[in-house]
Length: 366
Image (cartoon, rainbow, N blue to C red):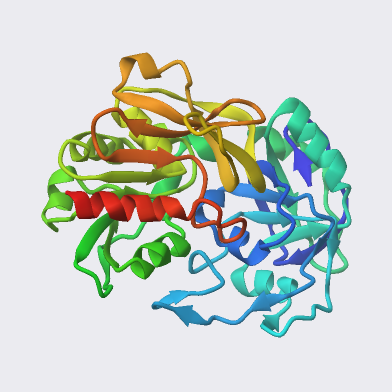
């Protein structure tokens, strides 16, 4: 494992023997690696898990609920590589179908274990996320460190390309529920649990590509629109920003994670890249009105500029109690809101599932 500043780590490889690169990030989540590894927001990243033992409950079966995988957030592993301290090769759990290593091999993803993930995490916290390169060698071969140190200087930054294009659906997909309300979900890399939370509330979902225009979206006659989570720089989502700016004038809108940033940009606000982002299951989101603090699951490297609200019709609703970054916004006069975290959790606390209820209430009121 080699970082762009020349730091390197030598450990044991697992998964697919190959060379891969990406943005090196860390998550402090203690559980939920099946959900985290299938979260499209990790596309283009080398994911470091700070919890020392990973894989101890294996990988579950492909069970379905409401037609969606119950334990996975998409149909594949999304990060380019996995970096951990200790790999469990003999997991035990009633739902275990295979080991973590077997899953990575099946998906063609490389991983490394046996490195000092505390050292790596401290470096990323101090200096910010870095581009990195990981090589897993075939058995009996050794990596050429000098070659890797030279190559890592030319690793492309995944945030400079449109990562959402690779995780959004290509054609609309319809999920039917028993209720009489329908929303269009702008798929920027949506997690399955977001769709499931809408279906459980009797809301049918039309999942459309992130490139759809407002006109195309409104052809479905939706009662509301959800702008989903996803990877990369929100400013790359030009079509989604343009569509959202029109949709807020016509229907209730809810944004989640990347959708929070897209809403702010659509309303004339601004976003910026954070030093090392928020990736954990214990981020404190403080409601500025009630002063109640919610523990939330987060996975993002960009945030809304807190100084941009004067020039937008939005107001800051939630802030992070740790670093005071913007965690949620709402429109001053329209049924429109967004949050930076994942109210569907998966994994993590379900404390803010009421936000889906609030959105359902707005659909009924319009």
